[in-house]
Amino acid sequence: MSQPKVSICIPSYNHARFLPAAIESALGQTYKNIEIIIVDDGSTDGSLQIAESYAARYPALIQVFTHPGQRNLGIAATANLAFQKATGKYWSGLPSDDVYYPHKIATQVAVLEQDPELGWVYGYAHYINEHGQRQPELGLFGIDITQAPDPVERLIQSNAISAMTTLARRACMEQIGREDETLVYSDWDLWVRMLAHHPVKFLPRVCVCYRIHSYNSSIGISDELRFGHSLQVLLKLRRHATQIGGTLARPRTQALLDLQTAYLYHCMRADIEARQHLAAAFTTDPTLRTDVSYLSRWLQSCVRLLPLPEPALADAFRAWVLAHLPAAVDEETRQALARASTLTEAGQRANRYGRLAMAWQSRRQLLAALLRDPDAKRDAELFVAYAELLVGGRVNKQLRRLSQWWHAAVSR
Image (cartoon, rainbow, N blue to C red):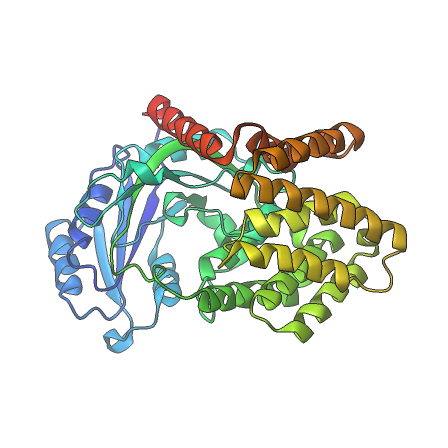
């Protein structure tokens, strides 16, 4: 049986020290029908020359391109040019400082070939340092969003896709359009649009090494910048949600975009904009006004899923939401949400500070809520919260690491 071609696209910028390892890992794939597209983004450290030397050695496999005038246009424009030059049925992106494991492409192609309904797959990555050494204390990079009740909504809450682990059908990516070059977090926007139309499968296998080093563009940035970059993505998705279509056309999903935008504006201390988007959520989806379970889970997710500069901000945000619910939310819903918020806050404080007496009281309250509320029984996040209260955050952290290690071990 003939193998469909896979395009491995490498956007390259000033990673001369790491680029050879990235290219060698692409060349070393057990899957052989590949092309390697390298686009240099105006590097000044000899990366372009390294890429061209590999293309000279492997002319049938490797092509190298640059932007006009060898300009530096950024990661999104560079990834877009690589995609434009690619010709394979499947697309896979490889940052110029990361490394593929040899089985990466073969494993993922097999999954997509067996299930034509899937648009893309992704998995875990190992962390490595600048010397290529594993960093097991960091666990695994990647989160299985397919276990969430609504994967699209989970992805809107934070970018949980380890981009370098993905493999996608080119036809699906052409349908949704390429990366938005005006966004810093353009890959997050891309994955949300992709998932809105095409289902994804998570493979609990480690297929990539993600390199941590002092040159990582995402390391060391301020909370304000991170919130600002995230806000750009959510505002763009909200503006174009109906046009993008798919699951983004649903009123509830659009309301979540409003809620998340309100959260980010609050984090940036832009109170007027935060209030506007909080109110907009209840106008976008009027059924939200009485959905206490959903609102409670959303408040919890703001604490659990998005990075916060300090724990006090989570408590302040819950109080802010309760104080600024729009008039359309009736008193019964307000009181129920306040009770749920108090319960969650008590449990998190108990776990955070290790006050055993307080933790015991919170365990009893949370267990009562799980037993009393039919929706809560199906809420995985609440069960996780109860488990953390039951055995403590440190034990749960070790259990998660053990689980990740087990998945990685059995998948090799």
